[in-house]
Length: 477
Image 1 (cartoon, rainbow, N blue to C red):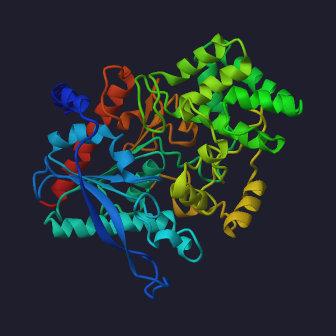
Image 2 (cartoon, one colour):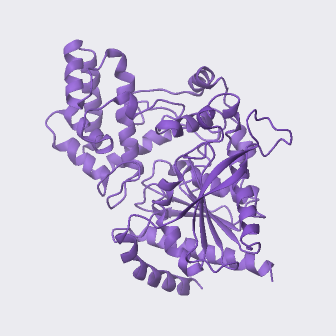
């Protein structure tokens, strides 16, 4: 079976690559579903309404109506169109499987705001939980299967990063609805209270240190120079402001935020270290970590070199650092706009994010973010105290022995990988390791620059998808 599927997949990619490289994205229908605001109380807690408009995207050109499988992307913390445009693997394999493709937007993100402008105020924001989002997806899938006369069509869940976590959780919680899950770059262990919290920025550092000799040292020197200039009074502040081309002169009180803003640029570069140009989190060249190291090592002035790296992520312009980077309960970044509010609330309630940088195991200035500091921030910002053990209770923690039909993939260039599943749990909960792969590279469209490891990872995923579909279909015979 494996060799046949590999041949079919290879032929499919050969015929589709031209098409996918000629258009920005696959077309879709934008639709809205009247979704329950609260799935877990029969008496409505909502002062406004019992339902909201949940956005979802559909592509049905390839579907064998009523018989083909459903490929369901579990939307994560952002506008669903962004994930649609960066998940080409699903579209490459959908024609062969004659699948219906559905991408569902996560509640409180993008256009799926249950209470409009009031969504991030109490009591409205209290209905933003992963459990509610998973129930959204379960209800949406179930209702659409009824409407489309597709009740016997198996559903395969896909997702990357937090969406990868949700994809796996869908299989854990709703195996009656989800036949199998591809969970790419899903740090399901890292968001619990079961692992150390210092690994993230250490692994960002390892990406740069392993890319070019002297790169890590150049970063350390650049940040050290920035700190010296901040301590040098107004003349130093003016020099830093000029080097980073900030829209206004920095003040001494801006030091912590400037470091966080610059550190975030390195985080983006490490996560998006793809072997070809992309524009997911920022317009970046191929191998952006290597390009950043070249800039760091080529410049004569260390602060100028650091500024050249931040320009890769934020653009070459006058920078408003307080608008380009928002501090929140996730030191790795919450994004911008209302999406940043939603993610900030989620990591103040259910999920533990990595600690800050420490300048010992990583190359960045020490910006601590202990669990106690997180508690203080969350109480002050949202009037909530995180439940540090809730994720391991609600989402199984590291005991996945009862799970089945999940492929967890992780790229070794991805700083999130250490928070994920790196070894097989059983013969149906599989770990796929991608040498030279960054953040959910396997979910992206095929590219001539792809390493052999990601080509093989996609072949393995296709094999399992085929197996899960066959098993599900046999149950309906």
